[in-house]
Length: 469
Image 1 (cartoon, rainbow, N blue to C red):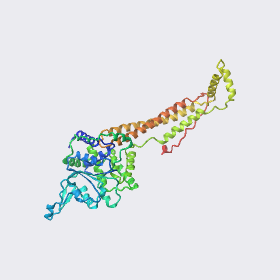
Image 2: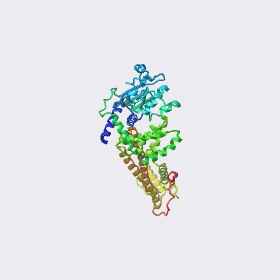
Image 3: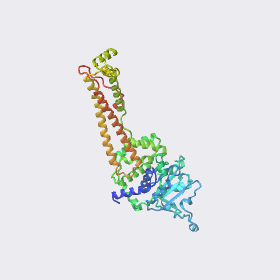
Image 4: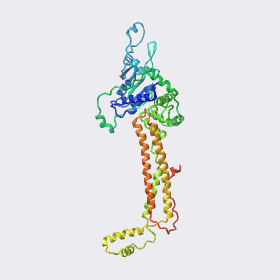
């Protein structure tokens, strides 16, 4: 077995080769390579022209096992196209055997396009080959060197007869056209093929060693708890998962942990679940959202009650700033008295502006020290809560970044999404914190009358049912 550091650099080099010159294929390349190391098959779901066959050819380039085989299947495809022609010499001896050299039974990696359009005779023969890695040739059942079959389809089958074959693909990966954000980069891509990978391709004995070693990698208790909690969700979403698929998922998770140099499967490995458990492309989203919300807590975490509280305090400060003093004398008389007090040579307009400003200040309600202290104390309580929450989130983000630093299999787009959501949550909370600091200063600047015997005001109220819950 290779050392941990050598294994990591080898896998990173292979992934770089698989991704070279392709856009937005980080998840597909990682899932294909991980599936091959785990001895599983991959179904790529997407329209033509999205590099599905190119991905399969590149996968074969990092595997030193068998040949590469590729076929487009139709309802008119014959077994000879996949498994080889009948041997005329064997027929002379009353034996029904095929000449398999150069066909699927001798392949290490195979790409089957429009895989569900094949007829039942081909699909039935493929079932044993995919699942058992064996091929019935005449009276012999022969072991095949097959590492992984990459199937491609525009749509997932719904016919009962095709579901058993669909289940043979452990990983189902949606491959969408390049997004609008990357469209310009797509048009500027260099058309030359990437150079061959510098890292050594995987030999059969290495793959066998990896699969034997993964059996010693346990699933952590946290992972088991998450999977147990997911099962009723799957039933609610009408997603049926067989016992065999659960066990295959566990092996895939162990392969991911082993190849990343970890001694057990941890919750971050569960990013693979949507690509294993979803039957249809539209089920990937809810499963991915479950992972983000329940496992890595990447969904927005700013308490909504806190936003309501800040708004309530801002409204209260506006009311108290604009409140007029009780028993204000006639405004005109007030202006005249102030004008006489000011005197001097000030122009009429200038004097009036000064009078108005002075009058407005005179007309503002004044508050007792007790009132102002009570408002500031309540705001400071919220500031303390936000400080504590921010500290927890920042520590959590730093811990998550450290845990993800050495992850080979996490796609860059998923990494950016998770860390970005955490960062946006912290930024939103920091904005609320800044508004609270402004509120504290605003209440502190209210006009004060130290002679007032005004009692403490009732606390500012807001809808805090979520907070109490």
